[in-house]
Length: 81
Image (tube, rainbow, N blue to C red; front, side, top):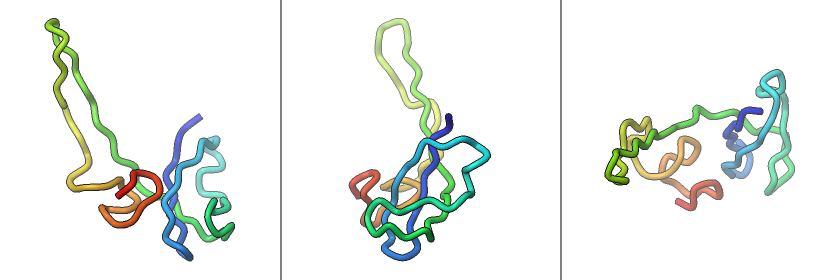
């Protein structure tokens, strides 16, 4: 089941939810204010590669700044920014 990121348009809370793909755009209750006005956000990702020497390196990341895709570096319950 995919993990989706949401942002409440009433209280600006960022949160994640495991939901079936068919429900990804269905209304979901905000965990902070219980509003049903949360909108799905574009998620970011990072890929880490391990070499033979057990060192790891960042291969790619779609995140260009601080914070998650939902908060963009603002106040966010999801990533702590």
